[in-house]
Image (cartoon, rainbow over all chains, first blue to last red; front, side, top):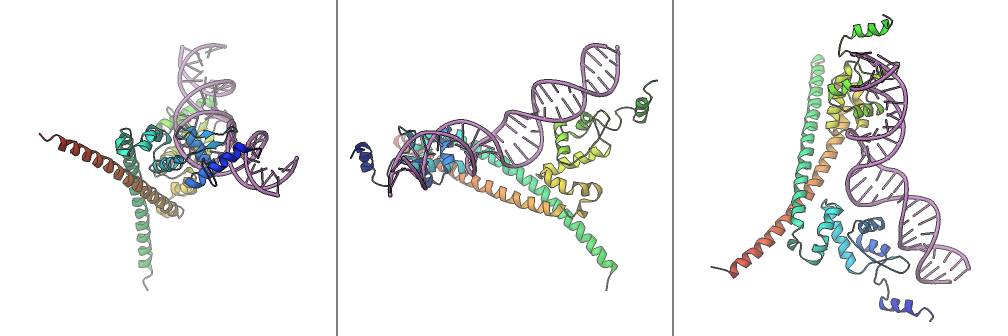
Length: 148
Length: 148
DNA sequence: ATTGACTCTGACATTAATGTCACGGTCTAT
DNA sequence: ATAGACCGTGACATTAATGTCAGAGTCAAT
């Protein structure tokens, strides 16, 4: 019973308890440990630390990380996410005025990228067609030489 | 008249003459000097060298570089281009069997990329609509409070 | 106390074409 | 021969999130 303080912490968070260590949060969210540390460096999450330096994540951090990943999957940068994450974690997204401009800018970027890719795709498809038709021309010419 | 050999070369290529130096080829093709050197390192072009080490580009190099840039603009990598450039410079594209597989693979990649972007775009547009409609809901609710 | 699982930080790598800089050699007109 | 424009090579930077490794510290169970 010499480590009473530690026992007390264990008693409060019986098993698989809170706060989470980084590996536990990683499993809970699907984000790699490396990514969690990166999000922290980008200012997206700020875990507490134990005396020995281990990160301590509170319960809310799971939702927080999932939210971050949702926005990353929309193609937003960590910098953009940092601009409104604080707000959207506390309110409905629609009440955060910083969100809509970012969304609309991203939408425009996406439209431009799509347009570019579609244009390239057209060029490429046209060239493929051109090659295929030139080849069939040749095959049919060969066919006329040997008509049996 | 001590530099007779040099005078001779000048006589053969009177002014702005061949072979081109790298800066001249750059202007003739629109590719930066940096890029021309890069294409060389990637094995796409192999200029001769003067005794002093300057690159010498023959007339054909202009077409060659323009061809390289055409393929780059289709999204192909220098490595892919290297796989068929030699052939397409000497034949019609349709006769180079290495071209079509590369084109078709690139087409598939483009389709996947476009699909991804379009999917993200849909998510984003949906979220924007959601925000806008929530806001109009609120505005109309405010409107009902003040009905004069 | 020792071992194994976990964590910490910091660093380097990834991709591909291009920009840019530094330092030094070459050419040409004066 | 000297200045100015040109060329040579080599190196570092760019972008953004993530992987991976090394070296060291922490924790828990035996």
